[in-house]
Structures are given as C-alpha cells and as structure tokens.
Length: 115
Image (tube, rainbow, N blue to C red; front, side):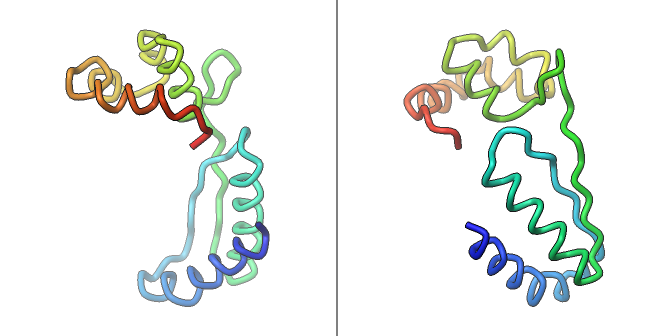
C-alpha cells in the first residue's frame, strides 16, 4: 500500500502541482480507515519534503464521535435516517428525505462494505 501511495504522490507532485500552481493541500483527518490514515501520513511527509504545505484537518465531532460517511451509511443501513440530521448539512438531509434518494438508499443498504 505504501508503494502505491508513494507512486500516486510522485504523479501528483510531478504533474498536478506544477500545472495548477499548488502551494498547499488540506485533507481531512481519518480516524477510522487505516489505509486512508497511512496515505495521509505519507502524503504529508512527501509534500512537505517537496516544499508543499500539507495540513491534516481534524474532523468535526458529535457526541465525541468523528463525523464520517461510514457513520452516515451505517445509520441509513439501520433505517435511522432521522439521526443523520444532526451530522450532515441541511441540503444533504433533505435529499435523503426525498423520493429522488430512494434508489441511493437502497444501494447503500445492499452494499455493506466500508466504501
């Protein structure tokens, strides 16, 4: 996994950073997924060596629990749509209440994986 992260970051540093004039990058803290947490750590180190500031931003928390898409999916799978109201933007909550979201909700309930 680390080798893939380093390769990905070399492509990012070689092609994307110069093309877009990037001087800093912000990523969200990852308290749950070890793969993403490792990637973020390698990225921070790799970018800072290249002179690019990399900030890992702490996640918002509700009741001492980091808000995550995984948590939202878990609530949906368990049929607790009402509970996502306190952890997602109003527009997201309204979307999940709509008829338009029914297909997505059904897909979430079938796919029990992390991502």
